[in-house]
Image (cartoon, rainbow, N blue to C red; front, side, top):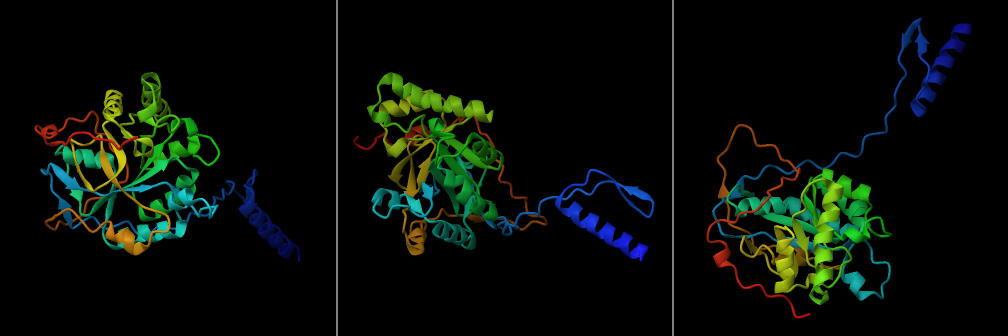
Length: 330
């Protein structure tokens, strides 16, 4: 009877230690054992990483087709009467289906470091490259989009309005740091999402230089990518962005072809709320020609850690091929 009671007591103590870390050593058969540390259950296993591409976009092309997809909210629009909010809101279900479609059709999300590295002639691009951008730094980028990107081991780019950090509906500084450490590239989107084409010289400087400085002070590394709020820019705005030390900037103008010469007016592909998967796929039909890789014994490891290619030095003659910079009429 005493032995049975002793065994029951040990079982009960062990069960309790699974919930709370015991502070005392448990004696079993006279031998002192260290306290049992119980960790939280591991997160759900992500999907298997995409296979390394069997073909690549080889270096040497002055212009390359890389769709830069433009997202804003990843949410269910809370107000059906808000048409703008609806158009800017891709539901979590639709977003997950779109990422599944990219994976199933062998698209490879890259970031702007990869695109710049390619245009510099320093590296190839994987077959069917695509860049996923998320404007404004909404909190659902962290809570909803990020887990889906992680499940697919996809890269992404978050354009952050530095003055909105820690505000309701927007990411916090801790979220920003976690995304950056996890391979999400951080770009600047001004301090207050101002229309830069209407800002006076002083405010224009503060919006552009200030957003870069604030993000770099938090992240501890250069922030070299910029996005014009609402896609509005002019020659004067572009010159300030260049002068601040950014290496590229994106617009809301449609298009998929990019070069080093037009890197301050790179076009994008808007992903609208309510858009069918068929329309999403149709916007990605123009892919860049590739060359097959020779088979190797061991495929290279896939990495989502960002690489800084700073400063940018475009290939000779690349700037001569650029078209004049023209922004939408304010």
